[in-house]
Image (cartoon, rainbow, N blue to C red):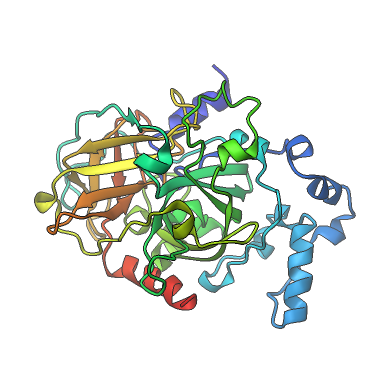
Length: 388
């Protein structure tokens, strides 16, 4: 077993931890998988590729910034130029960047928490028994139309998370909002916003294996198209305290994206025919029934190409008594499932999103996710209102 493979498995805790899902493949194999325009950019003088040292303040500045970005400047991860603040998110569309090779080649790289989480911090229940993840019925556009994969680039290469289409009160029936984990869009305390963030609903809709997808084109992997994020928000707590390893920032590890179709066209919700409501301030664990976690686990024994889910009665997990307690369920999903939605039945019988995968242990026996309270609602409202 290679050192990389061992590292991936160790970090697979469950696509959980902060980079969780993030699934990353140090795809410096861009030379063969990236489009020609990107390959050309890599041989230009370094100065040509540098992003402007300040954020754009005018339309002309914005155009110059985006052109530099598209020429390949997004590969510059110099800390002094890595946009970090909440208002700094910029993600111009690079047509065709997420081709079939880059999507299939994005591997997970997670951070995880110790297996022996102390039971005396806050309110923590007994570690749940592992629940074997179940393959989701195909086609996904019928069984889980709101679920998909989130792709992005980081200093380590191409990465992948899971994500969910959610309802937007500002645009009933025409939502372009996506829910995922904070660590899938922002590096936390030691970094800034990730780049080239794009959402693919019903990825690999027919559920083919990695072997069967060897010669599959983009139309098979992304039957409903690729949607690029043009707006994003995560919690300030994640930006300030989120870490690549361990559970720091996990109770605030959530994010909302606004997306646009790469080729233009209908809204995301109209395209997939579904969007999930978000249940903020859902009941405490004792009052919650079964939770269902969905996602695309990518670390062994999974291949990252198919969707799985776990269901179970949640328990409580607290890594810091001063921070909110998280939901936790038994689940064997690994890295790549991070950011995937957790769903529960509301009193009126409807199903709603109540959390997302954030962390898990190296043993990949359970997953934990934040309870969505006032801070999560603030993040959601900021994106909805910006595009209302």
